[in-house]
Image (tube, rainbow over the protein chains, first blue to last red):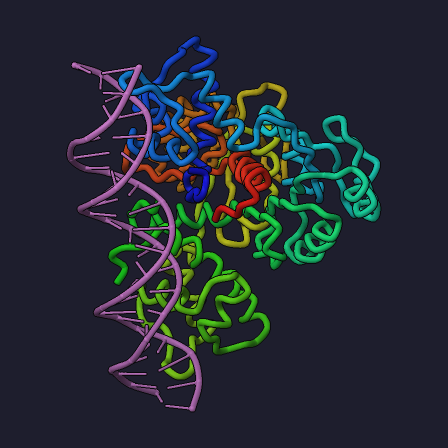
Length: 211
Length: 211
DNA sequence: CCATGTGAAGAGGTTCACAGCG
DNA sequence: CGCTGTGAACCTCTTCACATGG
């Protein structure tokens, strides 16, 4: 167990976690793979297979203990601790993300924001003063930021990403519509909203669901 | 050809399209599968296989004609026309998306925004007056909106989505962190930014790349 | 000679079916 | 008896390798 995890499994674990949180609030203390998956649209086998990759958390003939499983999943996903997140680029997207409650709920704390626009530097968004991007490298090195959210224009993304990586940051969530070329030790996830719209566009034209 | 398209193929076509746009601007008129894929991190075989699902666009021994291929890909993805997009929910995320240039560039035109907050209704964002969500159903039926971007709180998403579908909308880009239950004729894509951060969190904890 | 297009092989992920155990 | 845990079957997507044709 733990040796290999399909990409999709991780995304589903996030969904199970969300569901388990609800179930816990509702006071449910045992849940079957069927119940756990149905709201999120996942088959019972898939739920069991996903969980079994990380251990045996259930009781045969009964199901999974909600609170305990929630803890296990949190631990697998690393949600049982706080992550320090830096946000670079305070344009439309960046500004929206500072105040995005969902992040904070899951232990992702945005501790700093940067921009290169003089008009934005020094201004406040959701309690955080926007810093000059010139101070970025000093700050990242000093404060041991875990994850950087990159919300800068496409033509600056690669350059900024390299600087960020040079400061020891190992994980980047990239909102710029470019593929970053970074050393393999760096974990990158891309969030490309235009691609999602294009997938819908394709479906509408071809009358076909695609994932 | 055209009969079946892997989910991932569509996402890659979007990337090829982006790359082709650049190549066209640079005045390149022929491109090999290798060149087309390398910037986006896709193997030559993959590029050829993806394209071959929709036709034979290249010339053996030479490569693909840039402009022509760009046109073909645009046509496959439905980017050769304008899509009318409605945006529901003008919180942090919604507000950011109204001004998101990338959408407009690819033919997605946000023609209307709605919110249920009296303080926001009537205010202007990027040239669009925020309408009362009460007017939504009338508007959607009348104006034949193609795609709706749902940026409302999680606990309202399902209800609003059902209304939207009731107005004949066939495609939804959902930013709420819930799985929508909608008739199969409706195309839904989910954009869940927290899940992406969780994937990074997992990678950091497990020192493992996951997709 | 070079790069496409594609059948075949290979990986990777999902579903099935049932043994196992509370 | 009920539901988990899991090997095996299945299916889908990716990579390989080479015939094809400009």
